[in-house]
Length: 120
Length: 108
Image 1 (cartoon, rainbow over the protein chains, first blue to last red):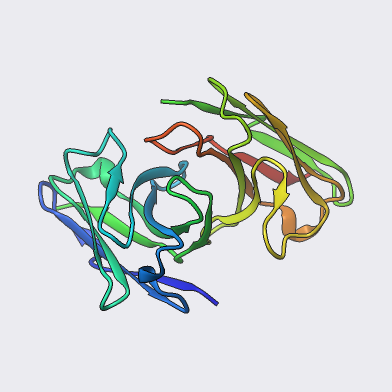
Image 2 (image 1 turned 90 degrees about the horizontal axis):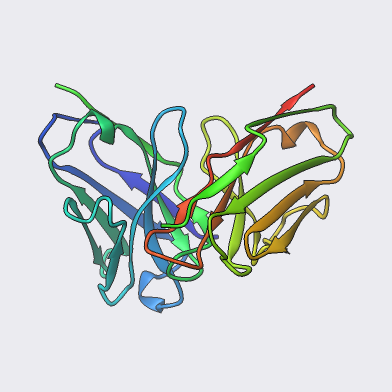
């Protein structure tokens, strides 16, 4: 059974960089069979796709966030990571990592999500 | 960017009744559409992909239909565990991947 688990600080100051890691168990990122995405959900709102990474390191980002987002992969640790720079209160959200059957989804396995609050 | 519009925003249904949820795309997404269920405090769960294919372990009371710009998720007989928020998502024209705003199915 594939499992994804997000980890990282729950509180980030405005203008700083948000950093999260997703650890995958029960399956290997290196298999190349899937794509690995970050998706976020502001409190009480809908879902926003941030971007994905493939095991090779190729990425695609949401154009609305592209200038601030970096997604990277560490296949030796079976992890992928998200960095979002210059955060504001609008970046406060539950951040999910998810496995995509194809590059743009659908997403068949999700992490439980982690709330990141941007506040001084 | 393709805009996904879900209706209604809230659907009040009695247990055992049928629920019909709609999702409209601002341009054709072919059959590259998925439906997800989200309960409070939980991650979304994939229900349907390819507009009409149930994901592994999803009960047969959930069915999806449509293609192009108009899609429907039907829950044939609502069970207590089905009261949740449902999202559609297109994966045809990207980036970005886009989701609808959600339909909340509540107990009548």
